[in-house]
Amino acid sequence: MRGHQATLIHQALVGRTDAASVATRERTAALVADCGCGAGAAAMTAALLVVTVSAVARAAYGPVALLVDVGLVLVAAAAGKAAGIGLAGARLRLLARRVTSQTCESTREGAPAGGRHVHVH
Image (cartoon, rainbow, N blue to C red; front, side):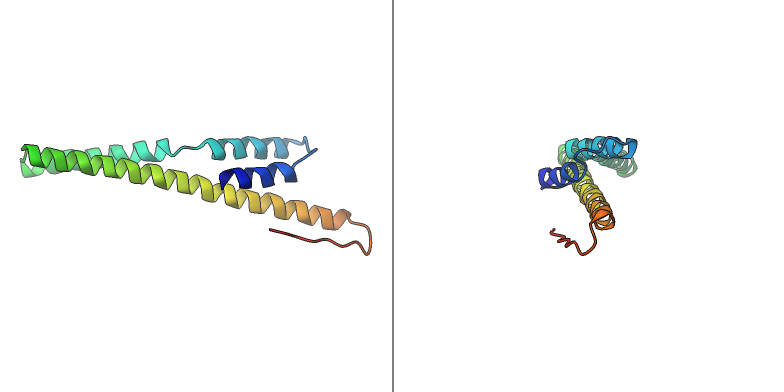
């Protein structure tokens, strides 16, 4: 799905070399490459802090409690990574929508009188 959105953006910017278009291409590349690691690391860190404070507060250091805590940290990391990937995809879709709608508006403004414009999503 990300590849499709990136293709739409690149097609909309063909032949444009202005600073805004270059910045949009760079942002597109960053969003396509975003793997969610930052969000996963943040979620894992937060979960690790919560689990540590919880373990100290309950004074439970048995093997079962340790396995449960490790499992919670790993689940939080995976959930954070998935959220990061999803957020990058949503941002890419919004960027594609904005770029393609701006391109359509400029096409309409530059179209000859009586010209037809078909907007396909």
